[in-house]
Image 1 (cartoon, rainbow, N blue to C red):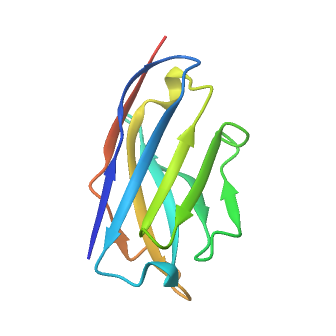
Image 2: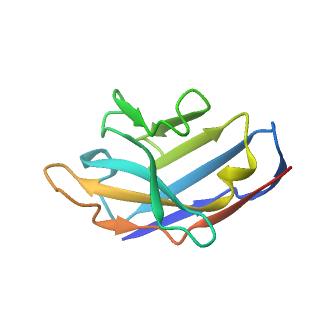
Image 3: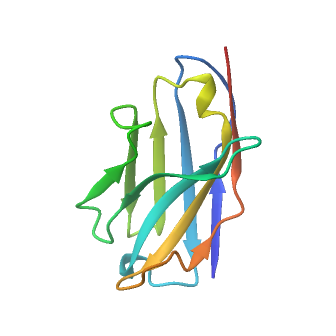
Length: 118
């Protein structure tokens, strides 16, 4: 199983950036997917999640209205579109997969760094 997050980079405050997560080794549509982040010196934080069908999404209050999660089950990919970025969004972003019925995220990607300059 492999989750490969990509798309990180440096962006100015107020700008936009899109991340992608490519999955292999799993039946992608059988997994709810999530995005998490870890800012320097802080604990890992939940960003948002999307159901296996893509029909339901949920976001943390800190990103609601600015970030959008989507998925393409035909391509085994999930995306995170980040708009109106703030310096406090600077973090390593991770994607994770949770099999239906699991209380946990079973698989994690390696992370991609997003840096928002003020």
